[in-house]
Length: 421
Image (cartoon, rainbow, N blue to C red; front, side):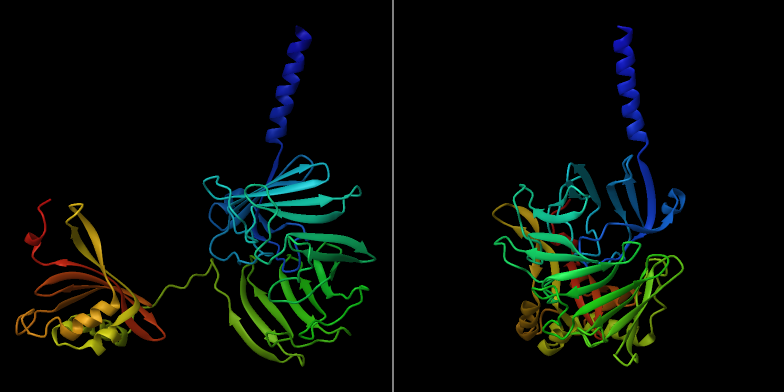
């Protein structure tokens, strides 16, 4: 009996130890990868749990052997959506068995979902030497499926210093690297840290060749913090070449904590041809006080909706209403004897502006149109209109420099027109 109790005690304590010994680490960012799912998942810019409470981050959980078993995505706003570079899910659960690594994907409610490759399950296979040799995709019913790039499986093998990658669809037909970049069989060269250093397009004899756009490789440089700093495009002789997007290489800019804040692109002569700032979740710029011009225009557009009805101006109605107008009021369904949200389209409003007040009896001779601009924030505004007939709330949007009414909810000014509550 004593031996049995001791045996049970050891099982329980070892189980508790296994649960509490899992290492947890916090990272501000994922290591960027636009090369291949062969590249291992990794975090960059480690932080402590206290810092993580007030900033975007990822949580990596490891088992006792140091393998990743879970990644929680608490990255706010600026996780770049890309089938290779981002998770696209709240949680990744990773399990291991002999020669296999299985990844499943979940939302915040624990529901299985697809990742940014639009697959439900990923199964990596390793050979006896521990080399990552294959990746297959599966749907929610555990049936083989293709990713959003038309790929059902990746195959990898080693050839000298290169990782040779081939991709296949469900018909076992060869598939290019991505729908927008035509590399077939590829060779991946890793640096000493395991970062992808170069990605070559190869022929059947594994010789470097240019694709149909003249690019034979793209090459990457990472800085000491793990930031993807420079990416460049080269021909078969390793000479800079202009890619299909009109530049030869790009240099990314980062702030002190690893947020990408800028990008410059250069031609083959190393002349800067364009650049842009990248929005950050750390430095969010608030809108300034609106201009007098915008305030005046918002009032004109909002009142124009009423004036178009009153004065039979369909052209004005067309101008002030957005094509995506959502106009709603309280309706009554006689069959179900229930109220419902009754919608009116922009086309209907233009027709009303043509004929609804043709007798000039729908409004007083001098209509009482009162407007209150409730709020303006940069490209959106909220307005209240009170006329002789209705009380209305309007949402306006500014697109390509022009304001228009995009949402409108109204009811009759005379509340006696509705059933008493």
